[in-house]
Structure formats: C-alpha cells, structure tokens
Length: 554
View 1 (cartoon, rainbow, N blue to C red):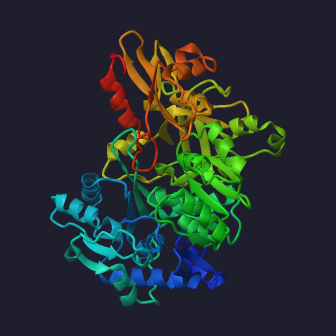
View 2 (view 1 turned 180 degrees about the horizontal axis):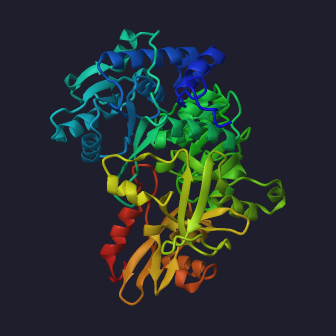
View 3 (view 1 turned 90 degrees about the vertical axis):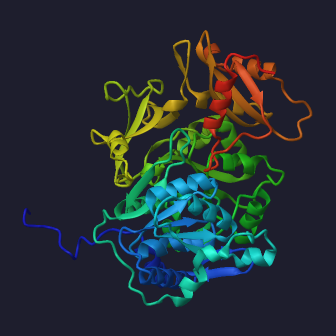
C-alpha cells in the first residue's frame, strides 16, 4: 500500500470553473440567465460568453495572480465575471457597490487590480475612486452597459466621463475567442477570489480563497441546502457579498436558472417569484423582515426556499416569513469561510412542535455542514471547549477546507485569526446539549453592565416579538454607575393606530427577561442605518450611544 501515490491522472487541481463547461454540455439548451423582459441566455451561451471574456483578458496581458475587480450589482455580466475572470488565470475581486468613493479607492489601492469592470450606474463612483488613488498604475476601466435599463428608461449615469473607460464589456465579448482554452490552476491552492469583509466591527480585510476551498464550498452548499437539479434561483443576495455564498458556481453545477436582480425591491421580488416559478433564494434576516412586512406580503402560490445567514435571525421574523409560505433554512458563515458552513439541520420530530418552538429551534445556527471538518466553542483564556449546556459562552472556532488562505498583505492579522490549528471567528456562542451551535453575539457587541455580560442578540430577539416592532438593534451606552447599559434603537411598523412609548417598550422587556438585560434607553427611528452589506450598522449606533453618554434623552 505504501507504494500507492498520487499521479497526474488522479490528482488534478479541484476548481469550480469546470462546472460551467459541464453545464454547457449537460444543460446546453436550458436557460442559464434571465434578466428583465428581454435578456435570456442558455448555458451554452453563457459558457461561450465567459470564454470570450477570458480570452480578451488574456490578450490584454491579464494572467496568473493578477487581480481584476468588479463594481456591479447582480446583472448577467456580474454573474459571467465570476467565471470569466478566474478562467483567465486572474484573481476575482468583487467590490461592494454600497461603499463610498473613498472606501473604494482604499480597497483598490490595497489589492492593486489591473482592470476594474464598472456597471453603468456606478461610473461616477469608480471614476471618483480612481482619481483619489495615489498609485502610479491605477486600474484600467471597463464599462458595462445595461440594455434592459436603457429600454426601461432607467436613470443611467450619463454624467460619467466615459473617456476614462478604455474598453466596454461588449467589446471584450465580441473580440474574444470562443474556443479559448481557459487557464486551469497549477495548484488547487492557487488563489481564485479576493473578498473584503464588511467592516462592521473593524476595518475591512482582504480575504483570499483558493480554488480548492471554493470548489468544496460550492458542492457543500448544494448538498446541505438540498438544492435539486434545475432550480430557479433568484439573486436577492449580492454576489459581491462573499461571492453570493458560492452559489454562482453552485447553480451552474446543477444547471439552474439564475434570475438576476439589480436591486432589492419587494414588489418586484414577488412578481419575479410568480413569473419565473422561483424555487430558491438567499438573503440576510433583514431580507426576510422586509419580505414579511411589506404590503405585498400575501401567501405564496407555492413554497419558496430561502437560506438566511449573515446575522442571527429573530424567531419572530422567521415565524412571520414562514407563515407566508417561505421555507426557511438558517445557517452561519463568514467571508473567511467562503459561505455557509453551519446549518440548522432540521429533525422530522420538530415538525410536531408548536410554531413558536419551531421558530426558536430554527433560530439556532446548528451543526457543521458535511464539507466542514470541525466547529467548537472555546474559552478564550484556556482554549478549552466550553460545556455543552446552552449557557457556557465562548469564542466560536472552526477548521475546514474552505477556510481562507489568509488576509492579503496582513501577516499579523492572519496569524491572529489562524492559530493552534483553528480559525478564530471573533463570534461568541454556546453549544446546546444536542450539539447545536447558537451565536450569542460578536465579541465586540457584548454589553457588560454591572459585571454581567448581556448579549445584544438576545435582547433584540425579545424586542422582535413585540408586534409593533419592524427592526431593532441593541448596543452599549456608557453609564457612570453600571459601566454600560443596553440601548435599543427601534423602528416601528407602518400604519400603527397607536405607537408604543419608550416606557411601554421597557416594561415589555421587563416581563420577558432578567432585569439587568432590560434596555435602559429606547430610541425610535424611522429606519435603522445599514452597513454596506445591508446589515444594521451597529458601528454608527454605537457612536450615537457613545455621544449621548449619561445625558437625558429627549
């Protein structure tokens, strides 16, 4: 047996790029992409378009280890570039379209892309960002048109200086070779994507993933969510957010239809679900909240599967969304893990429980997915596993094939995150007696009041059960006596005949949680501020609470 060794026949590098080639063969005549009323492609079309773009990139001198950035919402071009860029050998970097010009310029200066693809609506943003760069060699700009928006009369960014753009996306498709032999990785550890963290608790970090990790995550995501062949997938999750949790490659693997969506719009989403018989979609809990509280929140004609992650979803939100007909699967992941690597694996016997109990169980993050190796919660001081009693809190650590290679140009940050054979997430959680993980908070969001640790997530979950509440976020407010106290920012539902007062909200909490956890302050807002990834921005709310100090709130 000791003579048995790997050879070139049994150890080619794993890569998700081969999914597209296979899809063109198996599902060649099946619809791959639909967008608007006039744009539709087959998998054969998509494969050829990606090959042409990859060929053009190669002819421009783009090759291995070069970074190519993209600034675009969920359009057909954005989907194609998830394949086309790495098929040229380059490393794909999706940039969040919600960032301001300064932040975009900082990211571009950090990753030094050779090219920057820019959607028509973000031309001014890109030009301004590049103008702020002090680098000698700013990226070459490539313009992406949107014929659907032009036909619809959308507010195209006509004020942008098009002279700053050297190429157009359509040019690269026209000039590219459809018979191009795409560049396979020399090693499955070669980088394939570079993603920046959202920066909700610190400065954004550049997370580098390899072909092997993305391959494993793409397959794992299909298995764990039980995605069948030929699904109809609606792109409510931004592809710039951890590559859409690897579903661009995963949907190609099963020959699904990608329904592209430029921006979140609840009425449009309900129409697309109906018109295209959508079967699957992903999104953060805020998406569930918006879909279940809009005026269009009517019972669905057929069930739609939604995978939610990105923040712990309140049980009350899950209950509302499922009452409409959405079938919710809940998971947990990070940019550093490439996607959802913990899921609330559902047990048949739980279906017999009351709806509120089912929602409470589904709000837990769950157990590791099949493609992952190990998840644990450890005491930050000793490094030992905490007791599995649902109460002992510690830091969540993990190991698996899709964990990042490291942070770009940040060896110290990489060393702090990857140590002792584990990736340290910075998230705080517990493990229940049945082995299911539950996140309690980000370590930086724990509120320490009078020596007691308060989970902002647990306080938020209670407030979400109030029928008047639309959105809520709880942060620490400085207090001279207690050190910190919970401060709740609340937005209320529209159309309320009587709006609750601060005193009524506080009294509501007193009846449902220990006294030390009850918010001492409740502030009402029409809408809570969001981060660039659509999460409630606790950084901004913390700053507001910090400035308030011990002052009396009006």
